[in-house]
Length: 390
Image 1: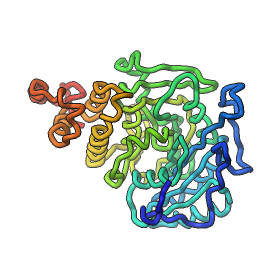
Image 2 (image 1 turned 90 degrees about the vertical axis):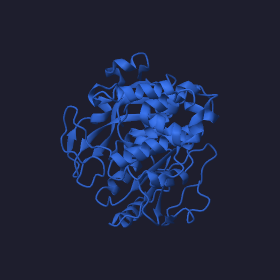
Image 3 (image 1 turned 30 degrees about the horizontal axis):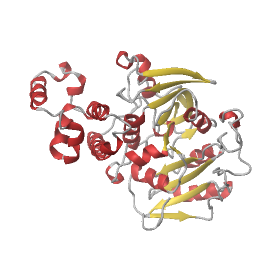
Image 4 (image 1 turned 180 degrees about the vertical axis):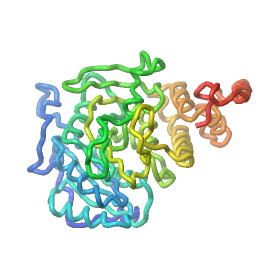
């Protein structure tokens, strides 16, 4: 929790205060629906309770869509959540619309926090995370919408007896600015299915879990496996370990950093079910593409943003690796890092960051450097994937 919100550039707005937390750790409005009581093991006793979920809605200039996002959280079948809407110094009418919506709902699970300066997506998301303390955390972009069973299905997945993972991700349908459905799934989620890749053979587990199909993916599987920010849920302890010390350096595509880092630490689980709606509109900061089809990306990470994400993750990975060796083998951490950033970036990291020595000192050998120089003489399309520039 924040000890001094004003010192952190945050202000709590309005009279909506968090409800007192009952002894069992739950926080919910008395009128809230609460499906999922059967999530707990049968005959587990009265000592066991369902976890609270921290929900953060980051918002910057989403006046047309923010109310729909907020109300989709209020309509969740799983009612044990706390929700912080963080306005990142919007210049439109977002802040007043948020406050009006919260005032009308009168739901003690919701709060509005405002930032005194515009800091970007990662810092806004982390401000919401710091203002909450539940063991599970999810982020809903201010222009997206959750379907009513999003939280319930993700909590069921994290508490299932069939597998564990650092993060979960579910599919999303696509809609336009007026809510018209455009496609029945999120393209990158479908393209990233490890079951389609021969390289992932033996590194995932597919299980039926109630009405949902789950795919638990080992942390050694590389590549994009997920949907978007609004389709993910994380374990807070994982976020605490991997969070970037300077969140202002990642103003966009925060999900790229968080998803890759969490997966490298503890693997992922895919929920093969549509549980939310991703909105395509002219002001969408990432998905500026309008072609929805085979192998057609909705958007692309800007080169400078991608570079900032890779450098931030690599630096953080090197900083935390020595303290994780008792849980994750050093060789596995090194393999994940090199697979994510590529050989050339790994050599650059070894040269510029003294903390990289723990992972790379016996990898960045003269022989490997020579091999890289020889491979780079080949045309880019002929180089093995891990030799190509990221």
